[in-house]
Image (cartoon, rainbow, N blue to C red; front, side, top):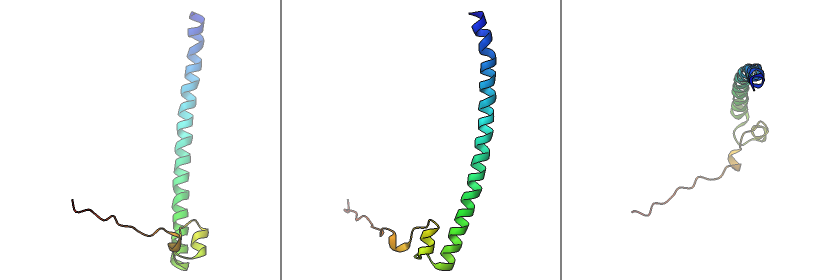
Length: 80
């Protein structure tokens, strides 16, 4: 039993090291994704400004065309 406890120590240390490494990698991934998303929004906004928000080009860069959006519906209150 003492040998098993002794053997578990290095394994736990390795797990902690790998978890820390994974946390760093996830932070780097998230920072890159945030930067990429900002660039995508900038491109989409530029296409919307040049071609309009109901153009096929706007749809091609991931925007939803005005003509494809659902109309706004307002709820009518029952007065209660």
